Length: 305
Image 1 (cartoon, helix red, strand yellow):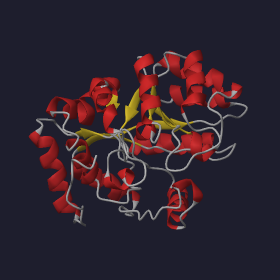
Image 2 (cartoon, one colour):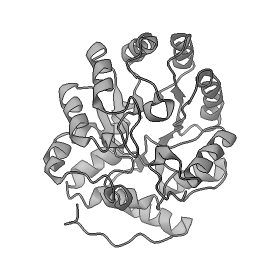
Image 3 (spheres, rainbow, N blue to C red):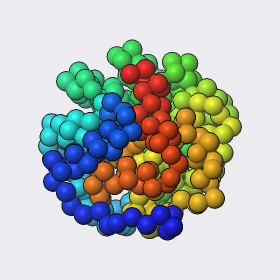
């Protein structure tokens, strides 16, 4: 990536940054952006997440990770709208049994009062998971979040098999953090999720963070399974390139997968301004058609916006 240098990203006020984001998608002739990886969750849970980042927790790789957008919930949603994000998600996830159903209950209310948020739900390998996943689907969930690293579970756990089958049958996408970045977990990496796909080849998995740092291996899964997608969350940015660089030899494969790459950001938990993710995609030099597909069209088609 070092042959695509970029000027350091400095602080910008919301108005200035919103204008810059809008210029980005306006130049491409898009009606806005669709961001499939943004975090909204109960405020006390989100604050605990921020505390973990502030404490340089082990799952963050011990990296300095200043949170750029610490506004209250309504302000954060309004800021995404100022950026021109037409649809976003509420990526929420449990770290222990008994938590997923409660989070899904909160998500129902959040989706009702936030119509531009794609109703998001989550799951965990525990007795009753199939029942509450079915409840979430019947309540209108349009996307699920799974976090193998934080949850510290095997995605191929037998307890999850009925839920994966249900979601595959319903065609509901699952954004899943299963790569080993920024720090590996017991069940991260391509092998566990490959076992899931072998049993549920129609499951619409969206591999978060491009599967970093195992980019090539997760590209292989996307090339093998037609319903596997990848989101761009934090990939190609100066921050991630400093310790998990994307292999330039994989650029042709990234270009070829252009119809299955979706914009993700990790907002609000970003150690840099939102617009930097867009600039990082632009400097890959994969062309405006690729950018239009990634930043809007692919997700708009997937979620029938």
